[in-house]
Figure (cartoon, rainbow, N blue to C red):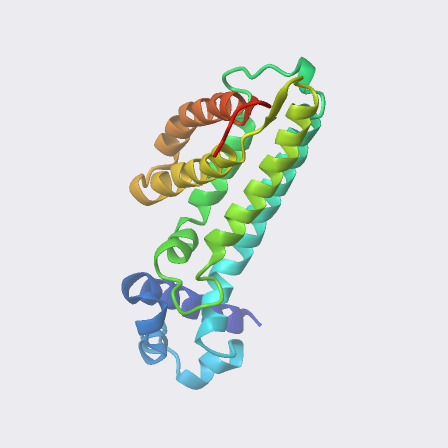
Length: 211
């Protein structure tokens, strides 16, 4: 069992390197096996095909990311449900930022693969799933805000825009800053900016013409 686990880990490490260098479509299973020091037959003992190998690298970190987001928005929703007493303060989201940044950087290679080299896999549109999740949760929070804010309605355009701005902030950081500590320092500041902007921009007067 120990030898099997070691072989599997060698294949995953070799595959990660090959996918990072060439992308999924151009990655060579033969080279992955050669660099891992195993035969092609050994690869098929552990993985069905190349996509199954790619999945073994990215699926768990992505699932855990969804869980982190789900838990965060559940907590946010509880606050927004009593928005009449909610006031944003800098640092309100520091715990969430720490958790999210640590997860992203612990699994940075996997997320870089998803962002830049997933074309041709079942994960190539994973960002669409993230946008859908976050925008859905934003809508829940926005409805709670509107419920407690007389004469205001949801600004759907701004909500969609803020969804992409929020995601792009993390993507830019992950792809341009390799140091987790620096990333955390930057994102703590950016998150305060994003949250305060979201609170101010997500509602508008009911009689505003948006056409």
